[in-house]
Each structure stands twice: as C-alpha cells, then as structure tokens.
Image (tube, rainbow, N blue to C red):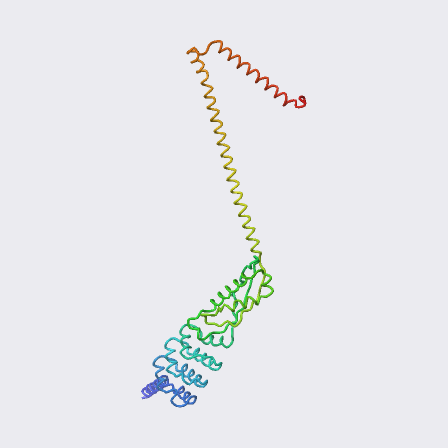
Length: 336
C-alpha cells in the first residue's frame, strides 16, 4: 500500500510540473498585473510553449513595449519575428530607444533591418550618439599636389545612422573609400602643398560638398583633418627618373651610331682589300700581255730593254726619295 501511494504521489507531482510548465501561471499573472486582463492570455502562453518559443522573452518584451507607450505591438508580432530567426530583445530595445528619442522607426522597418543581419539596436544608438570613423582605418592617405610635393593625410569622419537608408545602404567601408577618394582629389587639385597646409579645412568643405553619404546607411555630419604631414618631393623624383631614362636612351642611340660607324669602316676596309686584289690581278696580266706582244711582233727587244731601263730608273728614284724621307725624320733639325 505505501508503494502505491508513493507511485500516485509521484504521478501527481509529475502531472503538476507538466501542467505548470505548459501553463505558466506566474507569467500570466504578471501580464495581468502589468498590462491588465486580456493583453497576455493564458492560451497565448500555452501556444508559445508548444511552438518552442520562450514565453518569458515574449512576455517581458510586450510588457516593456506597452509600458513605453508602444501599445500597437502584440505578442503575435513578436512571436512571428522570433520564429523568423530575429532577435526579439534587440527589436524591443531599439523600438523603445527610437520612441524615446523621437526617431521615426516603425516595427516593420526594425524587423526588416534585424532580419537583414544588421544590429538595429546599434543603429538606433548611433543615430542618437554619432560615431567617429577614421579614414583610413590605419596609416595615412598619400596624395600629391600640383607642385609635386606629397602630403599624407588622415581624417576623422563623424556619422550617424540614416534609418531609412539602413536597408540596402552601403556600410562603413564605402564611407571610408569615398572620403579617401575625396581627400586625394582635393589635395591633387591644390596648386601647391603650402596652400593645403595653410587651410586644411578647404579639404573638408570640398569633400562634404560632394555628397559622399548618398546611397549609404549613414549621414556624414563632419569631416575633420586630424593629421597632415609633408612627404617626399614626388615631382622631382619623377623628373630625375625621366632624366635618367632619357640619358639611357641617348646612350643607347649613340652606341648604335658608333656600332654602325665601325661596321661601315670594316666594310670600307674590306672594299679596299678587294680593290687591291683586283690591282694585283691586273698587274699579273702584264707579263702575259708582253709575251703575247712579243709573239705578235708588236714589241721588240729594244722596246723591252727601254721599258726595263725606265723601271730601274723609277726604282732608283723611289729608293733615293725613301732614304731622304727617313733621314729627315731621324734628324729634323738638319733641314732647318
């Protein structure tokens, strides 16, 4: 008998626990005390348990929203967003913060932003308390003025969230890229680097006038030049490099002309040797012609001896002339 009583007691305890789990009486009473009868029904809480939705999360969310004045948001709306994979707590906090700050944010827009993967609570907080973005995130932006001097700049961009443009709008990276492009363009348009150093706020005004926040999730409030340093003389370096390149081109052209001159000289030497060979060949034909003249009777023996005498006399004169030239070279003062 005691065993049966213990079994019955265990069954009653299990049934009570099961009933109190699926019928959260405490949360229902909390809803009645906080919002009044009918706002959070016991049937809604049981349905949440059966659909594997946290009744505590939905109940606390609805109570906080209604207490903040957002009475048009019901438990069904929060349940739908929870089942869609959204962050109910972020939605509740963002809606309350936007309502208190008089920021126009509808429940549909907030859920769309949350389901798109963006933190709607941070978006609202940034809309209330603007944040500062460094452009670039690390290092400096290098730009060259018209006089060839390099300037290294770093800017701080103050932005706040543009709630209507948050869905489908560009993020921080786009703002940084556009601001960097604007700074480089503004410095490049300056006549000289000293004008940029004297009035760095001209860069800010020029960049702001371009409307860089169009199509983004942010509204640019200000662009401040935090650092501005002078870099290298890029213009002079480029001119030096160009001069070096021109020198190499001129040297290459001169070397080409020299090679052509050497080739032409070699060609002329070859032609001279060719002409000399032809002269030798022609002189070799003289004895044959003389022999043929003897055979034909056109040349007599006296003519032959006379020609030999002339050759001997010419050779003697050449020898004397050669010895006189050598003596003049050996004793240059003698002629003087």
